[in-house]
Length: 501
Ligand code: GCU
Image (cartoon, rainbow, N blue to C red; front, side, top):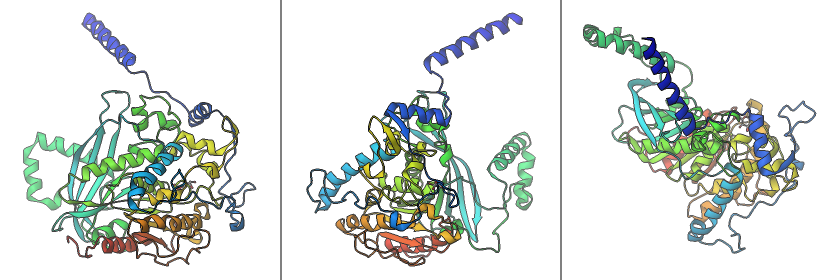
């Protein structure tokens, strides 16, 4: 017996040694160490510190509009690098857009690696639920990323897909970035639900009589759902389902951690085999948007989903991710880009609220390593700032054209902080309009002169074009704009509002 144990021990030790040889352990850095590694790769010696979001702090961000535009000239959307004007859609598609995409990838969000492994989706749970008063089919999915090349990192993308049960045909679906739960707030949360289901499955396998009983008296089933909840304003999900759409929630953290120490793990770490990034490698925002595109791959195979009308939504950091997704993944037909701020729709060249130096500081891992150069005060490239970035956010918005692009904000009085720089986003939206027009669709309906156009009062709907703007009177959320978004998208997609059409 003892001998056998030794033999077993030997085999496992040899096995482990082989695994370690084949796969060097992932690098374990603190966020600070990882950032420093990138500074060293870039030859950056010193960086400026980002301003504080606390308006009472002595180093608070600039909130004086007269000081917000030290770099008033934006890169011209419709001028090629060789100085020629872009006057036809063909030149936009074949020359100008690729130029812009290249700069945005290299300098701002990072490139997708060439060798990203494939994702295999599995439906782990299918349930009949209610969202509001509408019966739905809710599915919980796991997208397993093939890690046969580097087994020390496992990535399982977590997504929930909910579609109205009574639809007469495939429905448009809005994919939302955020932690996913199966619907119905009264049911146990995801972890509890899994534990219950597992226990029940075991019980059922042991005793078929229990199965029979549960089928006979469904109301007594421990897994029975409580039907519609009453009272309270409708949730975003209820509004979406009531409008005849479906929704999917995809969990960014299951794709890539929202921190710097995680950058040698998650999908970025898996592709890099646990090693730190190179300066033009993808950051978390691009990784999240890659994950959304993989979610879309699944949705294209789901017969309940109208795969030509899939949207992407996100608020705040996920608003940034939603914009990056819509810009780079042209199979998404529509986007709701909410309160996205710097690194989203707000201009990098603006100095108002959140600064480039905040994104090169604590949030550096959202971006490509190269982006840190623009917060440098000393180093190989010298001192640089937002005005040195070869592109700006109006160009990222323009990459979404002519697809449906809804830019949403709330108001500072209700908590959609000035930090987000609504005005800077409005300027970028105004400027981006010229590309929507070039491609034969409508923008928000004003001139494209971002230097003079004034942001309208909140609750003004600029929803007559494929590019749309609305600042609602709520806080740091897009909930108050959801109904405007759905009406606008339906109108633009030439659908009626009744479910299933
Ligand atoms: C911070 C950050 C923003 C971000 C926000 C969020 O405020 O500075 O860029 O949008 O967090 O995601 O909540």
